[in-house]
Image (tube, rainbow, N blue to C red; front, side):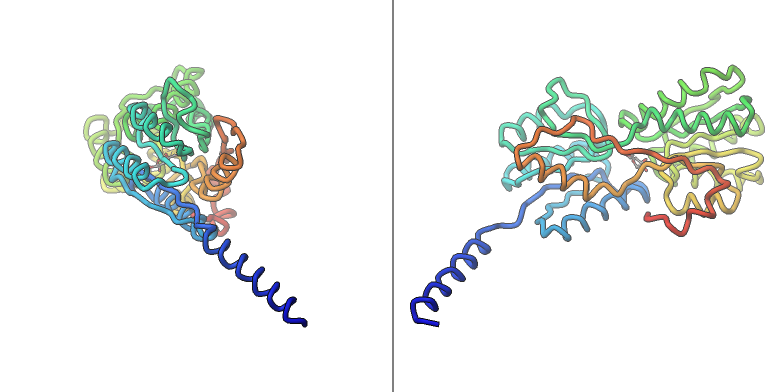
Length: 313
Ligand code: GZL
């Protein structure tokens, strides 16, 4: 090689090195609700591992279930000049002001697993979530089939004001309308967590006792709490009182195989890769669908054993 060629080679290597140095990692802020359920923890893990795989610098904030902490986190992401924001909004309302600040800072927002109500749809790029209303309808269908259309139901609702709680109730109410002998006799929030699900179920058993023959829980963690309460009351969950829920977490499959849970509807938390794909597309100038809809799957008790080995969360 002539000295000119060696010089040229060194120069081009230097250019590659400096560009690589300046191609800074993408910085993404992730405002997560908390760790209220196994599902939520699985979602956090999915986002963190997808960020790691992509070499994304992820700024993670756990709001401990409080909207004001999420709003603080969003303002901090603006101050840090992040390239994009992932937001799992604890409730549907109260986001307009802070999302206007984010928009002014020209930071794209991807909503994860829960929707929001805003007058200006440009305040977020897309919502990656399932159809919660359909999930409620599917539980109603499975419960109607199991009880032949006659059931005195107690309902464990998710977090008040959250999209999944509002829409899973809406869908279930629609689903049982066709069955006059299926009534919800008690309905209360258990905040999507096992402890509160157990406490509320204990109260239902105290006030309604033998009158109850079905439980509709908006998520598996509350259903698992209800199962504990039913057993402690000397009754057999899954037979004396049938139980249906949503999420399809691994412990729900274990409960179904033990005959204590009668069915669950899958709502996948493995949304990390999709969140970063959406961010890449937005940054490349694409306009995304407002709703990146995730498909659900029903898991009645009968098929739990065949599927548990392949469960990812
Ligand atoms: C659903 C998600 C819900 C889960 C719960 O997308 O928002 O929140 O069903 C979780 O387990 O707490």
